[in-house]
Amino acid sequence: MQFIPIKTRAMLPPKDDIYDLLTNYLPKLREGDVLVVTSKILGIHEGRCVKIEKDTLQERRKLIMQEADWYIPPEKIADLDWHLTIKDLTLIADAGIDRSNGNGYYILWPKNPEKLTKEIWEFLRRRHKIKKLGIIVIDSHLVPLRAGTLGISTAFYGFEPLKDYRGKPDIFGRKLKYTRVNIVDALAAMSSLLMGEGNEKTPLLLVRSLRFIQFTGKNTTAKLKYPPKIDIYKPLLNIYRKNLKK
Image 1 (tube, rainbow, N blue to C red):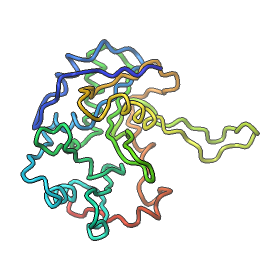
Image 2 (cartoon, one colour; image 1 turned 135 degrees about the vertical axis):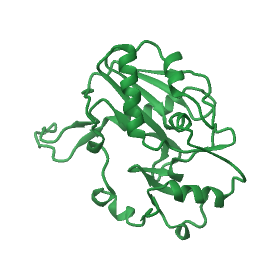
Image 3 (cartoon, rainbow, N blue to C red; image 1 turned 180 degrees about the vertical axis):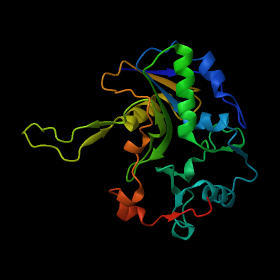
Image 4 (cartoon, rainbow, N blue to C red; image 1 turned 60 degrees about the horizontal axis):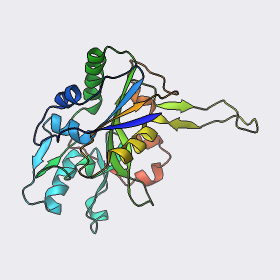
């Protein structure tokens, strides 16, 4: 399996064209490739950029509350600069809003990342005349009780997200009841490490020669994402309030 970071020009806020990057910087795609894309350049592509006026906690908090699907009430995090939110069924800081590499803008997630991901998938399949292709959109997030960021998927398209072990035996013959491996976020974590968080200018990465991916033309997002009410972390997520203004 190969992970191939792709260096590009900078995507320029407040609006730029991702299809220019895909056309001018991607090598010829092969059957079975998976393209990893940062959520930031999708937000810039859609013009989802807000000019930073004062960069105060109050200014950021107003925008975060607007963008989050679920949030922890501000009075419970009064001593923190960060806000742990849920956006598109992803646990993420500040609803995914980013200031780094924004050139004076807050960069928001795209409005409908699943729709845009499918559009990119269709464009690249036509352009490169291939059938089997996967797309993963990633951002960095924080894992509880661990220092440092890790990549997580915010959208994906073109393949089955899970390797299912249910009903299969372990090494002692006991049948597994619950175990499924999250392929999407495993690839997102490794890709994020190689793409970097600073001035690398590698917002695209190719994963090549995967032997365990099942490609499909169907939307398989629902197989990966759990609503909070049935998640194993439900007791912790109960502190969140739903954003009724959205």
